[in-house]
Length: 266
View 1: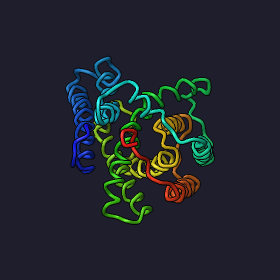
View 2 (view 1 turned 45 degrees about the horizontal axis):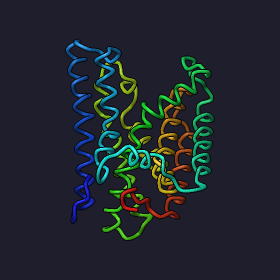
View 3 (view 1 turned 180 degrees about the vertical axis):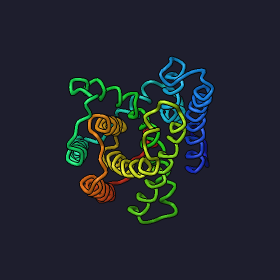
View 4 (view 1 turned 120 degrees about the vertical axis):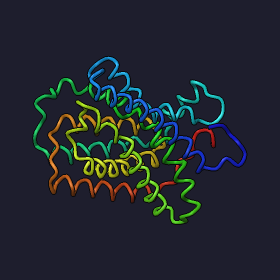
C-alpha cells in the first residue's frame, strides 16, 4: 500500500480484500478440488501446505499493503507496537473469556491433554489463527473505520458498523473450509460459527483500539482457539450471556478510546 496522493481508504480496503481472498480462496479452492478428486487429502503434505498458505492470506496481504518501502523494521513495529500500560485490558478479556468458556462447558476435551496447552497456544497464536490479526484487526479494521467515520459521525456507531462488517467478512473468508474433507469446520454449523466470529471480532477490535497492539490481538485470538479445543463447547445460557456481556463491554470500552493510526501515518 504505497503512499499515493488521493489514494482513498475505500481503495485500500479493496486492495487488502482482493489480495487476501485471492491467496486464501485460491489455495483452499485447489485443496477442495484435490480432495474431491482423491489426489491429496488435508492431512497430506500437499494438503497441509495449501491449508497453511490459505490461512496466511490475511497475513501476507497485510504485509504487502503496508505503505512505503517494505522492511523488517516496519513489519516488526507494525506487529509489536502498543500503547503503554494496556496489557491489563488484554488480561481482563483473557480472564473473562476463560471463565465464560469454562463455566459454560464444565467438560474438558479428553483428546486435549493439559500439558500440551503451551505448545498448542504458541502454534495457535503464530500459525493457527493469531497470524490473521495482522490483516483483520491491524489493517482492515482501522482503514475501514476511518473510511466509515466520514459517513457516520457518531464514533460509537461507526465502530459498531465497521466491526460488524469486518466480522461478517471474516466469517465468510472461512467458508471454503466447510468443503475441505477432514477439516474441523465440517463438524460446525456455519451460522453459529458466523455469530461467534462477529462477537469475537468486537472483542478483538476493542483490544486493538484500546491497546494499539496487533500482537495482543494475536495472543487473544490464539487463546480463543485453544479454549475451543480444550473445552467441549456447549451453547447454553451461560455461554450466551457471557458472549453478550463481553460484546457490550467491548463496545463501551472501545467507544471511550480513539481509533488507532497505522504506523506509517504517525
